[in-house]
Length: 240
Length: 240
DNA sequence: GATCAAGATTGGCATAGACCAATCAACTTG
DNA sequence: CAAGTTGATTGGTCTATGCCAATCTTGATC
Image (tube, rainbow over all chains, first blue to last red):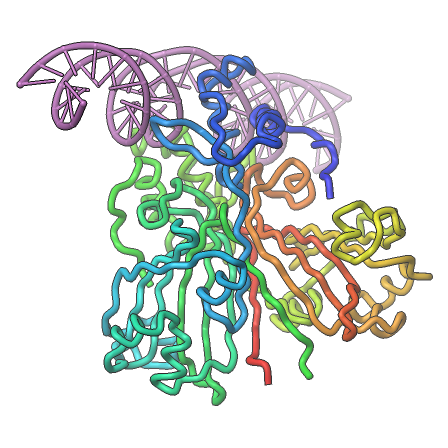
């Protein structure tokens, strides 16, 4: 679906198109000319070059490393998210998933978490914070809240790997349906540190509420995915 | 879920936090100080002020109009998208939906459309291009492709309003399941013109493939939603 | 009183350049 | 030859500034 000719465009946008042409067909990892070189080549300022490149980075077409250079980025990872787990989804696509545990403790629920889980503020909840990786690369920052305390949760989770598997097999908590909310956000310093992305990079923020067959909340999760590397897929069948 | 103190942050990010405090509790539409005034007040350059404000605009917290000023933006519109139609979803939330028809014609399918609809390139498809509005405000740019020609489609669509209703009631095309793909993109000149947003604003781009009970493609759609005004919701029930 | 014109104000785009920080290669040193 | 140092290169942040375009206000004009 080729977009029509831009009706009118600022200079940095035209430059963006130029650079897109420049990198068409190049292998991921290939370095492109330096910002200063591009500025000279296209008779413009480095500021304008940076604005063009910044958008291409935000779109996942380019990557850059201070002191090293700007290079062609690999294509997006498609990710299916249904009732399956992150790990299973990834493996189904032939990708190597991984997880880094940042925190796992029982805390008092704040107002937001309590409201979503149907608890009173201050009620104990299990808080699970992880970084999700694909092919060794950080893809998402995830914080899950589960109602109450789960005995021996840490070791059980380490054994099984998958959160949903542990909940179902060990604690008898079956997830019957989930509701995912997807919206855009911009990366702040925290996201930059955890995901290795740029300040202001677009994120896909997914909030998930999972319930059991009785309609009682089982899990409330906030996941921040890199918008430049990720695609969210949702499949829905007609009821019946 | 209040975010922790930023570990380290560029100046524009601190300014962003300042402005967030400034607008907390203000009514939507309230004008904030001019860029030049903010630059002076916080002893920084207008460039830095603009970077801070630009992110707040991208996040849907602020809006701005050249020659007029920068103002507090209204909250996001939540939108549920399942097997229901855009119009029904909106009305369920007490919002007034609308639609502007940009184009409706029978065209030869290009490679991409043909692939998704299971046709040969060049096969005729019905192309429906619309702007979706909520409360009179443009929210999304949508292009739908349907296999083949549909007799009297235009008048039937005008009568019923809903695409899915027309397909089912008039043409006997039942949608049994859909697959939505959600990713981020940045607004180009075309999006700016059609949606009244800023260059580089984050978009939620949704591709939808709808199939009938036999698994045959019924519809292939690309929708570009304003990322600052929209939330995508997907509900999935466990199979059974 | 309504209409139009001119000017002031405000955001939009772009320039030029300074300085910092990370990287990497070349060189020195033990 | 290995380890450490230095310096050039490259992206990251920020400043200061100029001009344009849209909007709104003000005031002259009919």
